[in-house]
Length: 177
Image (cartoon, rainbow, N blue to C red; front, side, top):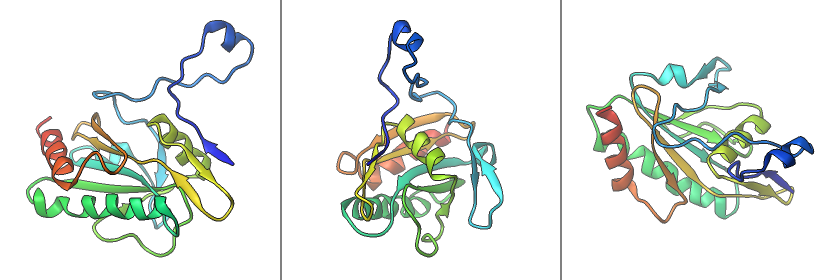
């Protein structure tokens, strides 16, 4: 079952007039991070405005079994290296789960949540599709680096095309904005 699709396929005006779903254009470098209301682990509402003044790194992740969860583990490990690589940079490490979450996230990352359909829609805006067979989940990965003013400065896609050094470099650049 497909739960999310990439929101970057343009449709014509006539298709929209016939009732086709119209998606907003995907976020681009320099755009503000989408205005979403999330909840922290204590149920308190929060969103991108709470990250202003810090470099935020947002990753869409999964937990449990399967390849997507293993790849998410790689992304999380890379994120957790950032405080050591950029000790003087105020950081917010945000994990947005696309699957059920067992236990607490690794410190210093903060797990945020929203209703699954909202998280899936936000992930889709960044080109991440999610599918499930009912017990296992598969999805792509996007890790978003947001500058201190709340603007997107990098979108790292997949897992194999970047590493912890790349992420640290992008976060360091975002800290200068």
